Length: 323
Image (cartoon, rainbow, N blue to C red; front, side):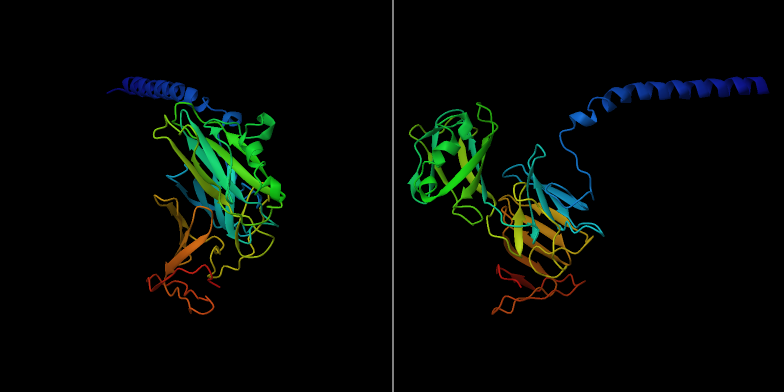
């Protein structure tokens, strides 16, 4: 083959490659431009701070089959002690973070009411007092009317009549019973900064119907409590701060830059693996148990120790007093 034929062949090959790249870029470009930065549903900027909704060094994610919320295991950075578990809704709204001493002060309790229905009514009970029947798609805020969840709860003698109050924000569901109506109830006034009883929900005069299936549920998002030190949750309302944990073996403590993994079981309980142990928490962030190498409890004071590096399961701790 002469040099002219070789050059011609190389030129045709280069042209084919160029046309292929042009076609590939033409196919990719519309997809890349389909969602702009301003249209993103949710994004995180790791390492930017310790405030509510910020993540330092996220090492694993898991979603709850109960609520659809997702969790990020955060072991912080070398300079910022985020060290906690962060929770977000499927729409990227910050729910809470929980870990060792992560709230800068008192926390008001937040509970989540979920109504999945296409018709019917429900009632709410708090400390023995029950509301009138509310429509399955009742508005959340008092600003939306006297028949709202907020206004109705505040008429109860055990809430408004006892010097307390609630505020309610709602996330509209769908009237076909597929997506639930979600109400976030925050306890304030005389009920602020305290661990309050959970609301109870039941069918109203006309039972809930038309959902897939029709159902109602109340979950505690974040337990309320005064300012203090220990395992706790922080919310957007309370604000969040750096963890003061010392990377010890107490519930909610996480070593900086530890290798973490996280999963959620069918009941919504959360398992955090790392620091040569596994910690189990309820969906509200309450410590349930831990297991791992040399995880022990002396039975009297609830004190314990953890032998770093050991992987053998030797004991299970089921006390909430693991100090």
